[in-house]
Length: 322
Image (cartoon, rainbow, N blue to C red; front, side, top):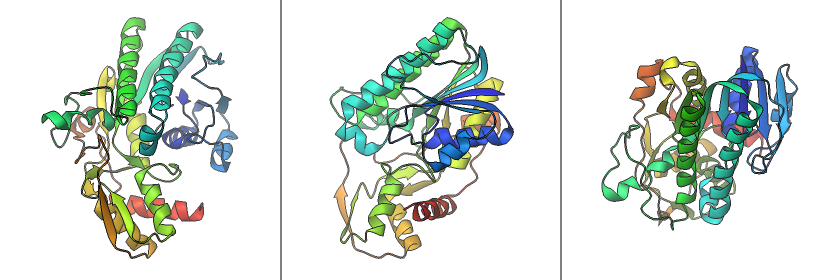
C-alpha cells in the first residue's frame, strides 16, 4: 500500500505513519518541520525505516514534490492547530490552513497523481457557532450545521478554515473523480501532541506546581479520544468503500468536564491545589460530545481506550520527555 501524509511529522501524522510503517506500507511524509511538526528523534527513527520517505516542503509555497504516479491514500493532515494559537495568531491559522489545502490539491492535479482516496482531517471546532442558535445536538452527529455567525471571533480562524478545506477537498474529488472522505476529529490526545493543547498544558502547569491553580472553562465538557484509537479509525475509514464521499466523526463519546480532567491529572502527578475558575474563552462551546454511530455503522469501529488509561499513558510520555 502507498500513502502520502501531509503533516507527517505532526501529532496525528507521525502516529499514522508509524501505523503504516508497521504494516510494511510505503509512505511519503510531507512536512515543513515547524514547531507543531518536529523532526525529533522519534520522527527521525521513523524516517529511517524501509519504505518511509520524509519530504521537507512548505505547502504554503506551492512546492514541487516528487510523488509516485499512483497512491492508495492521501491523508491531508497539515494545518496549524492549538487552541491558544486560534487567539494569538488567527490570521496565520486561517491563511495557512487554506493555503496548504489549495496547494496540495493543485500539486496532485499538476503531477497527475492517481489517488485511490483523499482523506481530509477536519475538526469538531466547526460546530462551535451552532450552540448560540440552539442547533448543537448532543451527542453531535455529522448532520449538525456548521455555523459561523460573523467572521470576527478569533477562535473561528481555525474552524472556518478547516471547514473551507472540507469544501475544497469534496469539490476537488467531485471535479476530478477522486474518492474523498472527511474526518472530523474530536479532541484527539496522546503522547507527542506538543504543548498547545489542554492536556499537555495542564501537565506542564501541574509539574510547575502552580498555586492557586487557574482553570479556564472548568465546567465545559469535552470527549477525549486517545491517539491509538484515532489512528485505527482513520486508517479504516480510508480503505472502507462505504466511507467514500462521506463525512465521519472520529472520537470517543466519553464526555468529561475539564475540571474533572484537571483533577485526574493532579491525582496522577501527586499534586494538590485550590482550583480557581476563570470562565470560558470567547467562542468556546460549553459541551462537546460526538455521535460516532455513523463511523461504527460504516466500518464497525468503536473506540477502546478509556480516558484514565489514555491519560496515564500520556502523562508517562510527557514525564519521560520533560
